[in-house]
Figure 1 (cartoon, rainbow, N blue to C red):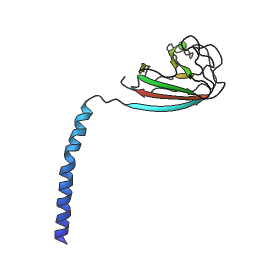
Figure 2 (cartoon, rainbow, N blue to C red):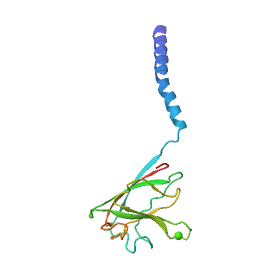
Figure 3 (tube, rainbow, N blue to C red):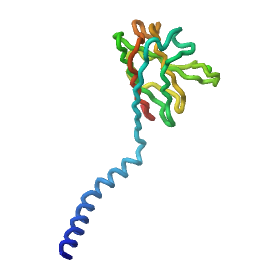
Figure 4 (cartoon, rainbow, N blue to C red):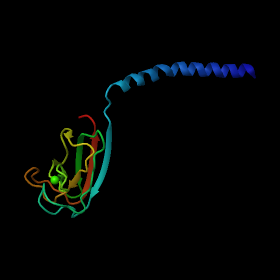
Length: 151
Ligand SMILES: [Ca+2]
């Protein structure tokens, strides 16, 4: 019985020794700034955004707030009916409650775009987007966003 116990302890030590290098590697990686990503997906339903692209209020526009440290966004818009899904992502910079700054996503972002962290960002799905995205628009569909702390 004692022999079996000793054998088990030895096995445990070997297993521990084998797993140590992996643990050490993980600790080293933590020193580098790590890219943290958060993926979120939301729907918009017709008619969410009626009005002029880039301005105005919206009922039924999904909110996609950023969290602390989330300063870059990759966005993809897949409309249920239109070949090019387009939404404006917009936020309020002067505290008057009206979104005034933002980006137009025409289909999808080619590269990560800068966004403000810890900010309530609203997605405006306009039926016809406008000059920033000719032929693009939004009836009903899905917005997929990946927020990250690095580009
Ligand atoms: Ca404002």
